Image 1 (tube, rainbow, N blue to C red):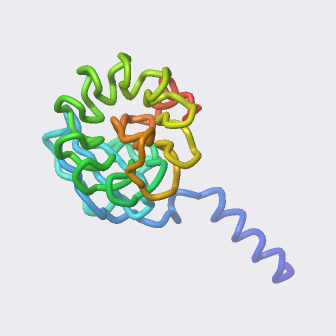
Image 2 (tube, one colour):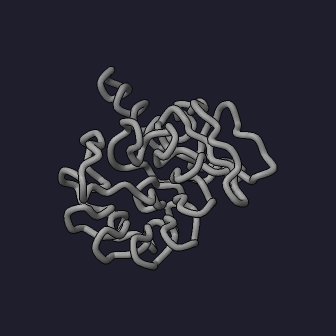
Length: 187
């Protein structure tokens, strides 16, 4: 058999085996318990969840194919600068502190209270009206231009700039299936 055909046969076998050749993911950060789950960030920059009473595994050999592997959470969108949706600093979308996207306290991204990330009321993270987290208009959470929640520019602090709440549609802090069903930017 020709060397080229042997090489192609080996590549085809490796491709069909897929997960056996997967690169393991290593834990970068444990975001702690949020409600009934613990959020973990891995080397693929993805957020995953495990049961609240479990620890984040230090390494995941194959997250997509193992039944006991953490569940994938959506990717964070927007700026990682201080106070932005992908920042873990106080008030940022990946912060569990007051007003942070991973906080379930009033005004936090995982709060259903007025002004919270899961609130459908005025200014809430699941509101598509002016200044709401699902608004694609200037100053809205899903606006990608300057001052919008999905802007990759650092926060300027100007009037009309979206300052939160950093709801799950922006931070990705929910199971990917929930994000697909509830977030127009994740479909």
